[in-house]
Length: 268
Image (tube, rainbow, N blue to C red; front, side, top):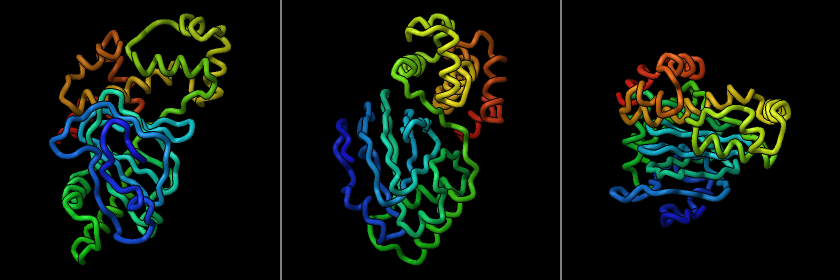
């Protein structure tokens, strides 16, 4: 579980102990430390993990699906699920690790959550606890955290990535430059395929048309910008939209809310 960029802050034996305290907390980097690029190889642990982002954008790879965790959000990773973490532009956050009994009450699939005020306050308190047995008050608050995670609606922040190496090159180029508006024909030539083969194979491997996949990717990249205080217009232009209204329409289709309302909630 070691991270090559930062020293390990958690003894792997703790995350692999399914019994013991209901939960304990760990930070991804020490408080006051510098948030730089992060890459954690594929690993798994016996405890379920709730990963929170204070800043940056974390990519969580689970098999062929990539989940994006933007600042202000939470990612639930069930026990014994192999996953890898990548934050090319830097990331700062924390984790709560849940024992087997608590994890059994939580979803058996990964999900991304936008926490409400109650869950945020409870997590902030839990981050101050030392790893060890919980007292009665701490156990009650830990139960509230479990209930909130179990009942909180999940956000559609997952993208299935293609497995064909030629399509993976295209997906990597999109992720690096989501604002790039070049045509399907350009990307087909880039991959060494015909336009028809590219679009047909993309649909088959991701379950989503190429255009829809690119639009969702842009929305996911918009989230940390909006949460950090960037305006809707600047965000839209930075991601390659010609008009703000086009961006708003896509954002609402993907997340069921407007970017302005999302930004207010993320900052509030």
